[in-house]
Length: 104
Image (cartoon, rainbow, N blue to C red; front, side, top):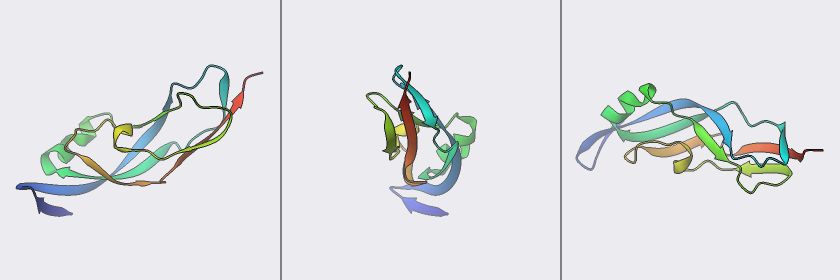
């Protein structure tokens, strides 16, 4: 889909991106992993979207301060390390859910 916006040609594309966890507390282990990938719809200048496949785009879920139990996190714009001109329109699933347990 192509639209004109702010004087530049814009487009919308669907990406499949892997999910990675970072900063998991050392006292916890992963009892139930997150989905391996998400579907992400992004919009932005067509030239930037054209080159997105050349970048490593992934969803990084920060577990800093997480405790044991089920945790659901809604990925935000900053979770994907995209150029500032590329905006996240929709993420599916909307929540990344993991279950963490204390190490014994």
